[in-house]
View 1 (cartoon, helix red, strand yellow):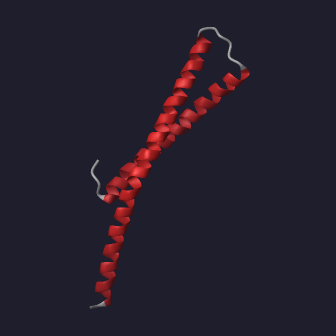
View 2 (cartoon, one colour):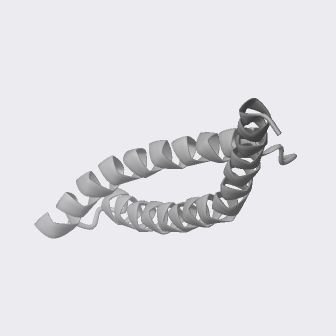
View 3 (cartoon, helix red, strand yellow):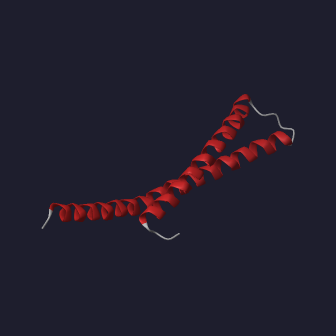
Length: 100
């Protein structure tokens, strides 16, 4: 058997291993994204409650005002991270040959 033939087989095995590794990573990426989505939903609920409280004329404490500001920033960041996660999942599925 030639060296080139052996190298071709090794390359084929590496491709299979890489594809299987990607397939194994997909559920992990999806679980991470799902967790972020749940956290985002909770943050939005808290922000809505605080904004409603403020709109109803209730004075927000300085801590609540800071929470509103932080939640807005964090919601934006997490939304962007979820989008990047969705793109990473789609790319991993494409590279692994997984439908969906």
